[in-house]
Image (cartoon, rainbow, N blue to C red; front, side):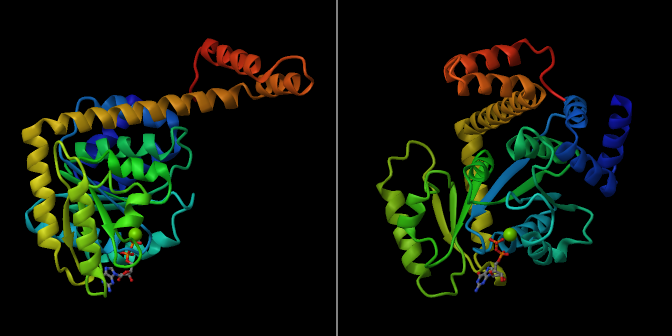
Length: 319
Ligand SMILES: Nc1nc2c(ncn2[C@@H]2O[C@H](COP(=O)(O)OP(=O)(O)O)[C@@H](O)[C@H]2O)c(=O)[nH]1
Ligand SMILES: [Mg+2]
């Protein structure tokens, strides 16, 4: 298996797009393959810029992402886009819209666009996405943009483990106070108030800036830009803000910190996935213990202890 995977990675690195797509699918669906791919990728330590783009549905993430891709391509970079879709186990729906939004890049061999869902990966997206990023970086995409809908906590997590997290807001739908409530004020390195062609954009920008000014920032103080992504306006400023944050990451040593945080989140997700897998394997024992609790023979804590011991004793907890 390992030599096959190694050959597949070679082909993907040589620019074979369908092979790359197959490997991504394998990471999503096939735990054994994900494991082998991860081992093979050890020899290609990933390097590059990982940008998380998050915000509420409809705010313009895909449009902004597409515009950023154009800007990065103009600088000669190879760019991969991962659109994380937690809402549906199937591709389609909202992602169709994303595809339309990014169509202009469809024929560019130096742009790889892919949507992904957790599907069969026991560690969920939090484990699958970093593995895919490692693969993309090994295949020479020096910029990887991850678009996630900021609805569930796990999606915010994925975006916030990026090197630079860009949070998109739009006038009216996400003013400063709402942003603070939703907890996205803490995760943004750069805020883009998109749809600045609409009323209230200036107010949103002002509000965000004053909320940020109230914060006690020891390192990077988040920047706020305004954009009209659909017309490409403000994209150079957004690119500039991302570059400035990237420079700060390097100078401050925070780059390494973020990488460590990313690894910790990935490994944590893998462990949780392994425990979930062990649960599935020990399903009968699990229900037997629950029956005992129901019958009043043991209490829930004793059942949990017995289950934990069982899982830890199981020789292999994966696959
Ligand atoms: N008026 C206006 N519409 C925009 C702007 N940016 C994106 N849109 C539109 O907003 C809709 C949602 O955009 P999309 O990029 O799919 O949002 P996403 O769900 O966050 O990915 C689309 O119809 C876009 O054309 C903008 O700056 N101004
Ligand atoms: Mg989108």
